Image (cartoon, rainbow, N blue to C red; front, side, top):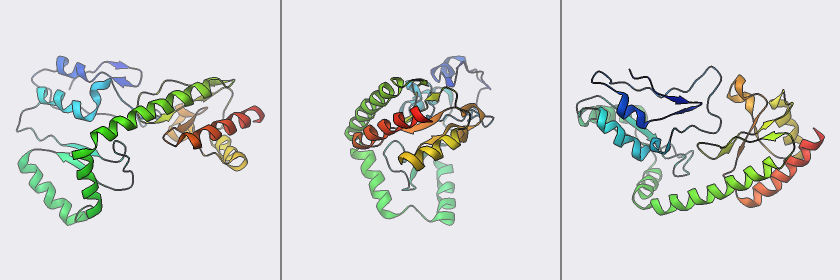
Amino acid sequence: MVSLPKRGAEIALSAISYQHDDTARFFPRDSDRRGDRGPTGWSGEDAFLSRQALRHCERLLRRDDAVHVVQSFSKAYCMTGWRVGWLVTRADVGVKLGQLNEFYVSHAATFAQVAAQTALEDGEDELRRMVEELRAKRDYCTEALRALPGVTVPDPDGAFYLFPKLDGLTDSAAFCRRLLAEERVGLAPGAAFGAGGEGSVRICYAAERSVLEPALERFGRFLVRF
């Protein structure tokens, strides 16, 4: 096992490459179920991106190590609900896992497989466009929220969520229920992500600007009278 340097909710993946020894063979990525489950998603430094993480693993692993890299198309390619992912593993293990997959679930729907193949072959330009668009939405929402009194917005390190903390809020579930009923704006209560999330709410900024702008206006209006 290797002790990794932590920075709050971050782990520097590149440090693995320099702090392991010849006995290191297991590197768990832990989602802390005691209260901090990453409401805005979790990322270490940029090197944790799936495409580059494999490069670090190559320095640590032998070709005969039984290592499985499993990922989904859900977030990276906006294919949530399509139920298709990918696996990189040792050749002999892959054959067995393929047999298990066929027995248990047969296969992903044909259209989802075709879409996934297209995403891998032709999706990089679209991914870059989406990232730029999401960055602009993140900046807009962050600025709008920080302009509201009593709202603190940490910079998000992953995914497309903000997790603003509201001064004096002690029941985020009740807050979100009232916000939905009175302003028709749906947010996730911070308490849903563990005790450490109470007092905050989660906002997804992946929606169109035509949705985000009135939603934030309604949120601010509601916050004044809550």
